[in-house]
Image 1 (spheres, rainbow, N blue to C red):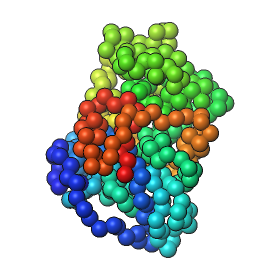
Image 2: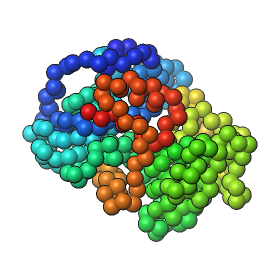
Image 3: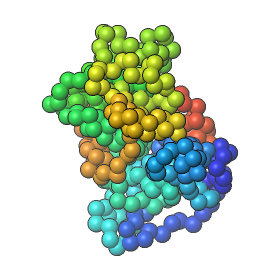
Length: 328
């Protein structure tokens, strides 16, 4: 846990096992997945005062109470359920997205709510813990541009930046299932990995071509899915779009959000900001894809709970390949 909005060290503490209310699910956590949003919450960048001083309209924010236990993506076993819970039962192996305001993932026990789905009883928790945020984010983005899976949709050209990251790895694999033509960016060490996940073209982001995001085959993009924060909008993104193409920002900063509202004011549809929706059916869809071997979770590293600070630093570095997991 941590006790203030600053990038301080995490503290390993002992607290009582939480008790589920009528709509809650008590999960014995087996694995928790870290995301950049976790340390950004600790940094305080998503607090209402900072955002509302920049943006003309309200957006979701996270203003947590201290001490705060971070982590919202977990996989584990149901220990107890509230009286109103009918979707899971005691003993089920599950995957859950916790409430961002409450967190709780980096702990032996956590309270989950309705965004919880059953996974196979013999499965390794680490393979599923990254699905509620990273996996479902990838799925919902591709569905938003009309992707149909198993090759039944239109073949469109898309660019995925940071394709070896937590969200990017799922985007590439799902885009392959949807029959899309994928150009992807990543570091040189991950080019073979990203190509093996299904990318048609892979750019080293440090090369001139990678910095300009230019397709090796000269294609313009129907959609750029940008998983990298602080990318220059006009010079690198819009120049590579088709006339009706658009950019979807996965990791928006306050500056990105301000740019988004400005474009809305001038009636431009070139920029969209992604917001995750709590849809259990989407989570179940992703679980089934992992079950049948259609996609896999690339694991960057795994840590024990008492080494969570090392996992935290790894997440903050921005150089993880796939998901960072803390196992209990």
